[in-house]
Length: 127
Length: 123
Image 1 (cartoon, rainbow over the protein chains, first blue to last red):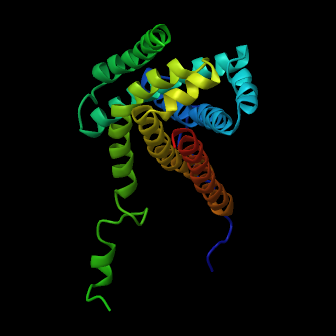
Image 2 (cartoon, each protein chain N blue to C red):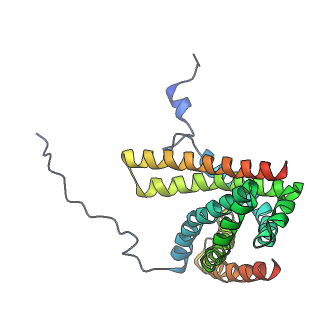
Image 3 (cartoon, rainbow over the protein chains, first blue to last red):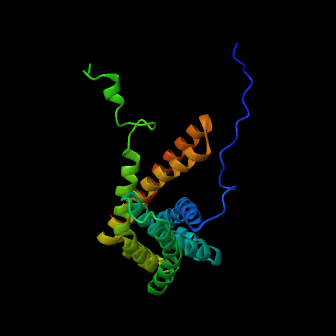
């Protein structure tokens, strides 16, 4: 008869085993920024709904979204959207089978980090 | 009855059961969003912090209204498919199903709310 006791198998190494690398960190950040952006979307939709409803309701929503905390959330979200934007372009580039060698992938990682900060600052200056 | 063998029906569908459909949608929506998001950021960023009247005037114009509607709709579809992958990575079984259902309902609900607000402002 077969032994029902589960065999103790070695687990494959996971995230906490590997040394953090630029490629893995930038990949994880893509997921974090993409999903965290939902906070900004909820705020923006609420703000639009308030604007559509009445001036009084708009004043309430606008006060929240333009408070120091609202400014912080929206500024971080602006960085998040630019980061996710560049990461998405890199993803399309990777999907085309290009830029997958380590030096290029690392270079692209630095472009994501630097580029997202620069684009955030440019946007803040323009609006 | 379709005259297909079981093998032929399964071919190209993979473990997901839907082949590369999901990935293809993410690529297409990514390109679409890449085209419209920068302009949207400028339009929205300029409107944010201004008076109620200015906000209503901005989103009454066709281009800002259409742009915002598209960013909301495509953005939230992109979000729902992306967040679904995250859920599928970290949750399993019934928890996974409940979370994915909630995610889909939430995404459509938020899209509908945003489009309603835009329609009310623009029309």
